Length: 479
Ligand code: URQ
Ligand code: ZN
Ligand code: ZN
Image (cartoon, rainbow, N blue to C red; front, side, top):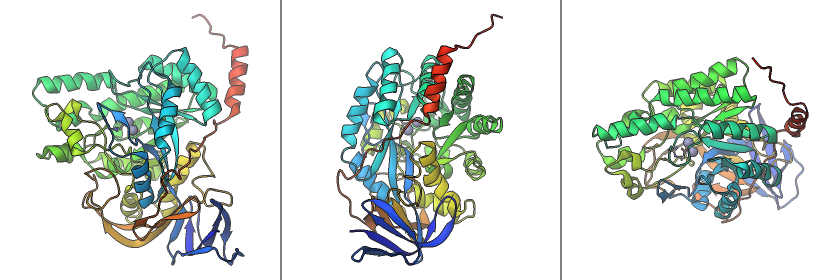
């Protein structure tokens, strides 16, 4: 039987309008007033609250094996926590170890994600290069609905992609109609700065931001953008955290280059003073890369979001508990990098963005849902309130207030980077696949209900012109 959400104001990326929403068989079936719906439908009274497309977090790492341990949040607890905050879809990352098969890693992550309670998709990381990687990228696009490939320019000695990998992979992504994405930090600089700091006796978490200053991100952002420009492919920068990398995005976009930028809720609200905390656990809990930045960068990132130079918001939800962070007790380079936020992204952005007038409600929907759906080719199935779209919705109570705490959050981690923050505006109900899965603070989730969302390549056009290009290879004039 269907569900009808009555008495709300629909808020989309485009407009706000009074409407009821009738959902049936997991999809939106009718939108409007005085709907003629079957009797017996479950009625959800929106009571004048806002009805928005469910949030999409395009950057999470559930149960990621990383730096000698495994992230404490798995696909079951992590997607449930997302629903508790209004996020109904995540895009997570398959990260193959170098010299291992992308396809095998994809199947492993698919298995891990089976327990999800809401929908998910995967970016696949290219961490090395040979003909098998070229081949696997094609199979992943053409047979498994992957249309985005990640490149870590950081993490030397582990998953770092050097220029050879970047150029080969960006070229292949272009041929396939897939979008290259990058974690832009110069891994060699980080590696050298880490060693210098350790040798100088700076071994605590305060060394982490010193080993990856903003210019380390700015250099890599510029390099990734220039490589994309030379290869005529779009590029998406994940977690743009600093003025320096934001500046590269703005420069390129102003010159007409197709560059997208993502910003984390954490980088918009948290600054680097957290690393000066003398309590190791507190400082280490904030060790993530890129690090939280000095005051001033946050304001620049808000301007990036307001101006449309940054299009999506995410969390990079990658959780490690205190006992895991303690692996770096005497050596900050060994503190597993990552922080949480999948449950709080939308409420902190509403409170700090909409309540302050930085963002309209429609812009809020655009940067928490619709843009990610469009950039990663899931729209209008996701990120819209339209007939035929998945019935993934959040009913937003702009007057409800709560104080965020690890003591009460649903995330499986013992720390919350927004600890103690009181927000006004939270999800009162979350609807996933047409079912009420969160209501009045209670989760009603079903393990395994989440589906893998296939994302088609951006255009067979790319394939077509790749063929034309191969038949008429560019003639390089000998200089
Ligand atoms: O770098 C990433 O995005 C992953 C490994 C999560 N960790 C982090 O510190 N951001
Ligand atoms: Zn990253
Ligand atoms: Zn990440």
